[in-house]
Length: 321
Image 1 (cartoon, helix red, strand yellow):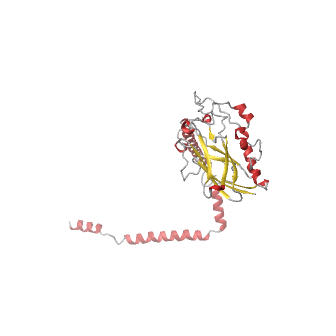
Image 2 (spheres, one colour):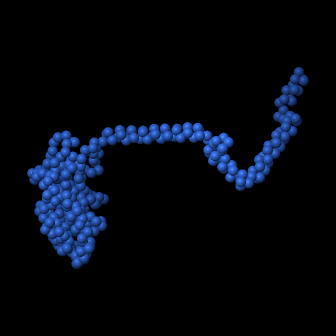
Image 3 (cartoon, one colour):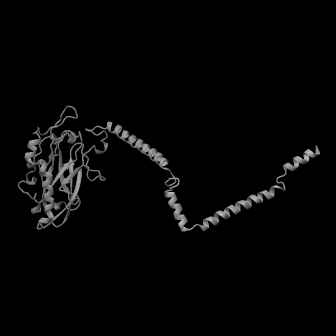
């Protein structure tokens, strides 16, 4: 029993004398191996490094490029080709399903354009109409812009493409929404002194410019809720006497109900937006005059300060003599 206890005690000791030389020997071998590798690395020349790079790019012995064989590269390229082909197909399928949910004739969500905004012509250098009567080159761009815009309103084109409608009532067209709708005539001659027919310069050559105002198109919108929407203009800030006279065409200065509702560009192909022309016959010269024109009618909003185009528009005259 004493001998067994002694042997077990010897085995339980943390370190036997004959193990230490082995540990030291292993450590010496590791150190010598590390030193050998460092010596080999230290002995490498630039030519060796370049040669290794060449072998990495193309190894003629193993016929590998960048460490891979042709078969390996082929499998990788095939994998990524299939992966991206699947992703592209998935994207195309999602887009196809989304398009199926859309109506090409009537937008599904129209909450952000429930009320009309307005815009003016000519619109060249922003909302400042600045020119000098004695310098035709300063106002000719405005005149050319007006003629280009009113081309679609020529009487001959309107008579050819559109029909005469009953004034004072909405032109409701029943039937399938995909059927082509007729449009009411809005002849250029209705603008009279601002039509560019009698006066090709639209009053700019005399310092009495014409401005055209139109409402933005909204599908299905019935402007004025049964009452024609009218337009009025006044000085926004400053002396009201800076604007002494302004004439409106058509003479009522309103958007007739017969031009509404609008059915969209796919079915209302020949539709031309109705216009109201404003002829500023007496504006203060050689001075900046800010003008605000508003829409007035049932359901019209024109007092939202953070939206300068909702139911109103502001522009500035600077007419030199």
